[in-house]
Length: 56
Image (tube, rainbow, N blue to C red; front, side, top):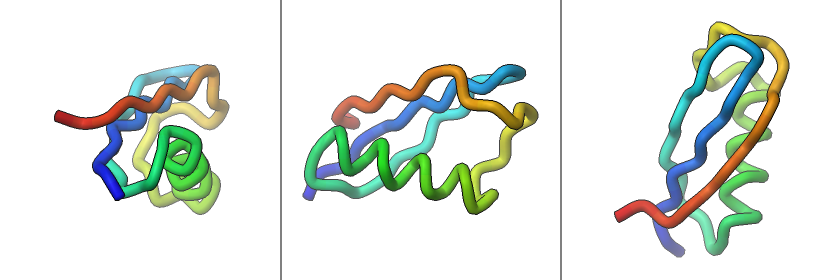
């Protein structure tokens, strides 16, 4: 497993979180679940874009 930075772009802001995942798809899935459960503090309520890349 590796650390991935996931960038969540909402209708009002951009939030970056770091998750431990096997690949980019799993990292995005984890971040989306966290967003849906309200575990990510964002000003916006609607996702516009999601991107994941390996954290350095």
